[in-house]
Structures are given as structure tokens and as C-alpha cells.
Image (cartoon, rainbow, N blue to C red; front, side):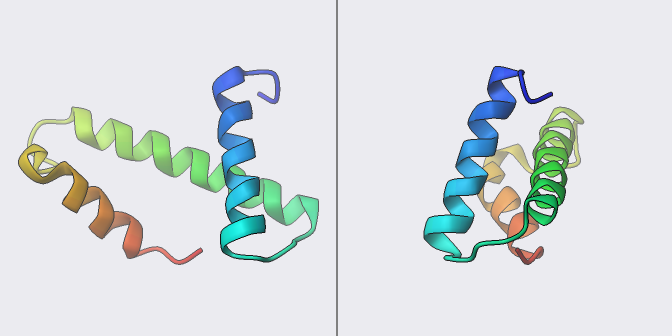
Length: 73
């Protein structure tokens, strides 16, 4: 997985987020656990968007924001 370019981009984004936004260093094993959890969430949300009637596509930004804001970092 580490050699999969989209995952590499995602990994850097998550690392930058925790370093610059959350301003918190964490052990590598915890960071990797969070990284995989977030990767799974992104793919799960993408799947939900493809299932008709699950996500209101007229307000997709609002729907995703509500889902994501219900989860803490």
C-alpha cells in the first residue's frame, strides 16, 4: 500500500494535518492506525455517494460535512 501513489499523497496530507493543524506529534503506530482509519472512511464515503438515496446529492458538501463533523480526530 505504501507504494500506491494515491495513498502516498493521502499519507502526506494526513501527516501535514496532524503536524500543522492539530499541532500534535504522535507515535508512528498511532499515526498509521489513524491513517488507515481515515483512508477507510474516505472510501466508505465514496461508496455511500454511489448508492442512490443514501446521500442527498443536491447537498453533497453539507452531507459530507455533517458526517465528518460527527467524528472527532
